[in-house]
Length: 211
Length: 316
Image 1 (cartoon, each protein chain N blue to C red):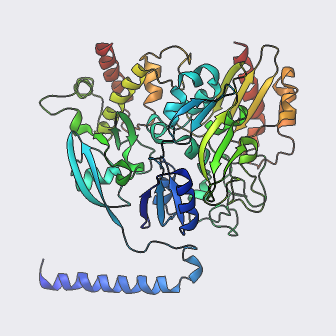
Image 2 (cartoon, rainbow over the protein chains, first blue to last red; image 1 turned 135 degrees about the horizontal axis):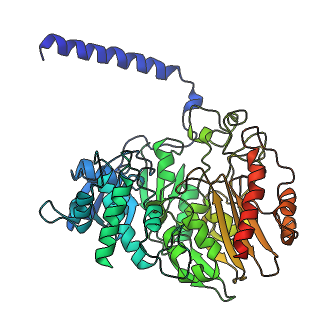
């Protein structure tokens, strides 16, 4: 980039910035928050164990667990889809339970044990669920896959633990890893490529081999 | 999100006092609804008080044969509890009919009760909403209102309470236990917990500022067949258009509460008196005074049909 174009960029930046400031100044005072608002970002230390490794970080209190994993620890296997808990791409396992890492703050996880897709298996030693997804082609673009796999591993554990679901026929009998049970329990993981039936095949294989 | 400070509470009374004395402070439990709203700047707290260290995560039996559910018990743990599954099946059924497995693992009992409406005009900060910004108007009235309320609404707000768990809690006559900022405890019957919008739709519950829910208690089991029948646009992971919670006894008597149609779980005890006569007899009493919009008038019919389906299911 030559000097002239850099100058143009910064000049444009100044113009845009100036226009924005003028716009903000025109907003009446009523738009200001009614109660006190923390003006400056606040940071806090937090220690997490991620995939067996203890990590101590200083994070902005606003940092989600998802952004902590991706932006601070560079574990980019966990994906950001909707960032509102609707798509499941950010699913990780915290103290044995699957959660949406986008709807949780890092500072809420002091001392917690977190397993991400990178902690389930390695390219040389795949987790059985990872191997089954490969075998059954449980993905197309792959973006939702880390969340699907973390969720799938936890779903089989939930069925084994007797957690009921919306399709469980009897609340007092142990649920089984049927196709209907797994479909219902995976409804928080969206796959826009539509690999659902292959994901179910992969899960069925792992459920069968574990049974 | 706007910047905020964060602290962990060490006792319920201290947490209540801290929220009452700190400007623009909020409790955070599971965070699944609050953080969603904070990202959209619908909620902009300056200080968060995290309740996870308060040891409110136990389910205990009460002296009179009921259950006391700690405010922090997760939705998954509550739905899975063997005593709940055996004696309060409608509660397990309602919980697993809502949200996703990931959300239920994090969402708490008290947080679920206090979840905000999913009215699209509440969520869109470019729209007028008396609940989000008191006095700004209601864009939902005359807007796209298919999912919104048909009864208990007002000229200021037609939003619904969106949850499933609270519908079962209302059916079971649960009691909400709280501690106030002055340290005094009180017990609020669930029938009195939610307030109707009237001209103040931003006030949704009987809680005073800073008042913290510590537990929800269930009276002793009443037997009967427990049903939670939810009708929604998808088979899973969607809010109810209409949901019916019912407990039906062998003689056909019982209780009914409805979700998805009002600013609170909707139960009319007088309507339950005619339950043995079927859904067609119950519905006019249950929905007396309903004011559906053009878009959601179908919910009146859907309530009757969903109740009829629930009663058939109860007969087995």
